[in-house]
Amino acid sequence: MLPSDILCDFCERPWSDDLPMVEGHRGSCICGPCLSVAWSAVVDGGLDDAPPPAEDPDGPPSWTCVLCLESRRDPAFQSPIRPEALVCRRCIRLAGRALHDDPGVDWSKPSSGAVSDRARPEDGG
Image (cartoon, rainbow, N blue to C red; front, top):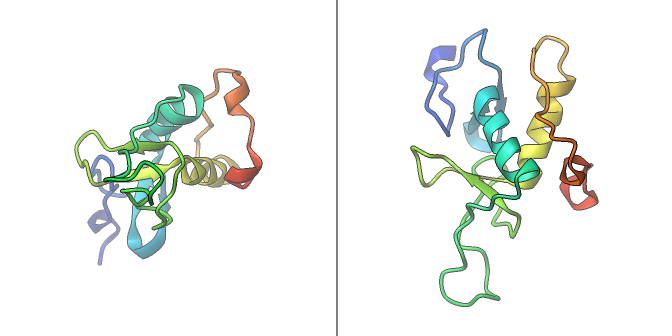
């Protein structure tokens, strides 16, 4: 397998030396540009693309995060080209921290300065 065989789950761009990626479980990936969009939408903007529960509003979530493989009640970002690809807010924050803290990657967390930029305990930070 070549690095170019590894695609972002959200935009389907291939991995390359100039495209930072964060890998989730079972080979799922999100690239830096998609992570920036997800961060701006969910963390800064309060967007929630997560589908509602299938039947019972108090029932289990009807979606699973592609990075952590958990069915979560967090707000989520959905790929504009792959509707089955959703990432939860917790994974957005964790992936953002991983890229931000990597000295070999030129990526910074998008920040509006809003209160929502601050880490929440339930998000692992």
